[in-house]
Length: 284
Length: 181
Image (cartoon, rainbow over all chains, first blue to last red; front, side):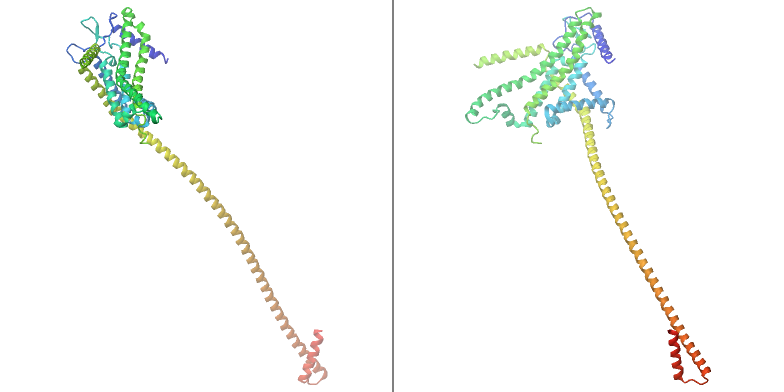
């Protein structure tokens, strides 16, 4: 009984998506998010992001409208999510940093998760109009299957990371953390280590610069790849059977949606932890 | 050198522009995405994390407060139990002492009363003895007088003469000596 509901849901989901997909469009999903209509400066992925924002807002309002000390319903669920995330992030960032940065990491996780899951709804990417190349341009497209969105999140994180790094370490601390020799070296050995750690510092800076790019393309690649896979698989068979090859991959995409949200949050949290290792020690 | 660097930079810029163009990245959409994400952050911070964390904190404080109160109550209970036990022990000790004192008091009172009774009885006995002795002395005296008077009267009638005070005294003494013997 426990398996019946999700299985049926996924079956219906894929069936609707397949039917909505029409005549098995094998051309696939374009790399860029398109305008919902020519001349309108709103992309199909933006619409999905707004839909996700609306869903999150509605849920938050429902959960926090009449808060009680003894929680029930939405409030109970929302508290469970927030508390679990807080405890989880606390283990990575430490009690001091998590208090300061929880809002960002929790937002990252919830937003990516909701956007990914909403992107699996029937009709997303399959209901639309044919463009000049004969490809279907969906009215809706997964929010994270748009590089603008993933890049926006990665760059906002990069800016915040830089701000938190400087706020916690100071400029001197930041430079020392990046370039100064680590370990217990004395005398001539320390002198030898200086150029080595300078070179390591340069590599570290390159690594820091590459992180947002990696975050951007990892999330985009996984979500775009998933959607592309589903579309391609549905295009392999006649339209009335299109749900069949995609069905197992819907389970995988549910998992990928969760895992990618978790990975993005984990990586950003770990990056911050690495630069703010000693943050909060003075406060203890 | 600078020309080469400029060419390299230009070609790299072209490559990046081409890559971004291929993926549909452009400033307006990128800024719109940034604003969308910032909006999500604001919504969640304002309507979700803020109130929920406040509620969690409030609950945590209440639990901590409850725990503190529980500890205090347990401490007070232990103290109260100790105080009660001490009070009971003290009361018990006091009661025992009072019982002993009462017992001792009762014994002393009883002894005192007994002594008083004995003394009173002895006093009564002594008074009775005194009274009896006085009565006996008085009767003895009256008897002696009567005997003297009878002896003198009998002797005067038998001898037919009037007895002198010396004769009467001698006869009385002889008669009394014979009666007392």
